[in-house]
Image (cartoon, rainbow, N blue to C red; front, top):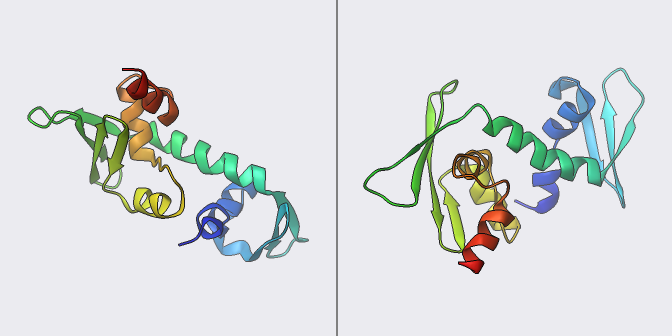
Length: 142
């Protein structure tokens, strides 16, 4: 997995353009933009900034529908459930670090220094933090 594959996907392009992912015929990463070929339309160029902003906003939005519960006998550990998919993941908020058992978190961690999936966003919100940086900053200050 590379940063380009994670950030600049056909699925993300489809969401940004409001089309079905099947309509994205090709996607190419250029210098400062992403060239997107859409079935039945002229190709479009989207900014890398738009994709990066979407990367975060899409996960934050998806986090709103998740249910977070505290694991009583496991401090700093939470279960995050997606009722629609009947799936759940374990999130840990440890001093100076975080962890989630989902694949998106693992992919981000492989590519970036810090990772923040929708399950982690839901947990941070549940615990009163507005962002991953707010949580990590609080840990350093404590």
